[in-house]
Image (cartoon, rainbow, N blue to C red; front, side, top):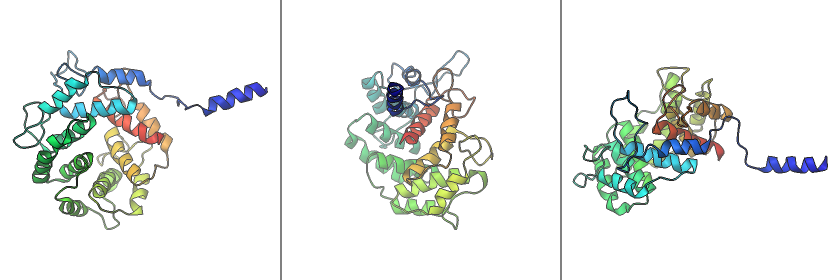
Length: 292
């Protein structure tokens, strides 16, 4: 009996694998198979019935980070470096989603994240990309992703105060953002952006994030008061992390993420949706945060 007790204590001391937690090897294999000969990654696995898809910078950045959080490696890192470099437009300083394409704000910010993830020479891209983001980020979504790009290269945006004030114009009187079913999503994304731009927030925001958790454990958009998706859950969880807080129902979030997993090892952005590199990245980083 004494020996059994000792063994039981030893087992309980080991890192636990929760019921339903995905097989990491299968998920890693799913992401790795999305890398193409060009070095870039497909957004999702192609099939005979699908429209022809090409590797993209956004998918490549998401794939690299998903592999890191799940404990995997990029199969062909050298080719990946070349692909990311091929998406850079030296003339504008920005990045496009595909080689030779037109640069945009989102792809430029993601390009900076990919550069830092691959440990490419940041100085080769930082100034040009910073100038591009400064000149072209206009909308909230532009500013949100641009601030993340600047954070990746550890630079302060030239328009930090202007951008922060633009976001704060969207703020409610109680320092929250949005209204109705989308309040947690809007508050999460906006507060993260304000914090990245050197601003402050209110304790009221944490209460809104907690109140916005839905019955299935996740978080969703304003067009539904019941459906959830991983992209929205990611935005809210990112905010929780930056505010050093957690949802009241942590196991609910974990359960929702598990419901988004498919038989191929990948994750859809919502339960029942086909696997994608974006959905798998959201699942990876949310799972990582939940373990902290």
